Amino acid sequence: MNYRIKNMKYLPFLILAILLLIPVLSVGRAFRVALLPDKGNNFSCGTCHTNPGGGGARNSFGTDWEAIAIPAGDTYVPDLANRDSDGDGFTNDAEFEAGKHPGDAASKPDKPKAVSARGKLLTRWGKIKADALRR
Image (cartoon, rainbow, N blue to C red):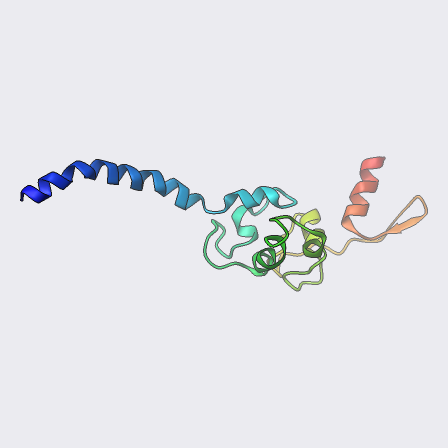
């Protein structure tokens, strides 16, 4: 009994340590959403994870991020931008530009109609948007 009472003085420190660790463990890698082209505004942690809240299994874009972006210093590099992670026929960059999910094959941009601007035929979202902004 005397042993239990003697060690009870450490209990508040143990509880405090656990309480301080809970937020650290629950935040995970949420800083990565700020590294995405849309800054995580469209899908947040669900951009890379099958669970929209984050954590756990990754979708196809998350798997590609892990294989390509993390070794490149956690950066959205051209190799990842030009990849079609979900296999829907659109690059990750085109999906981000259209506000669609790069890790979900059912979420894909509408095929842009060819637009003629200043004598050029434009068919990519970014070019169409950029041209519209110049006007």
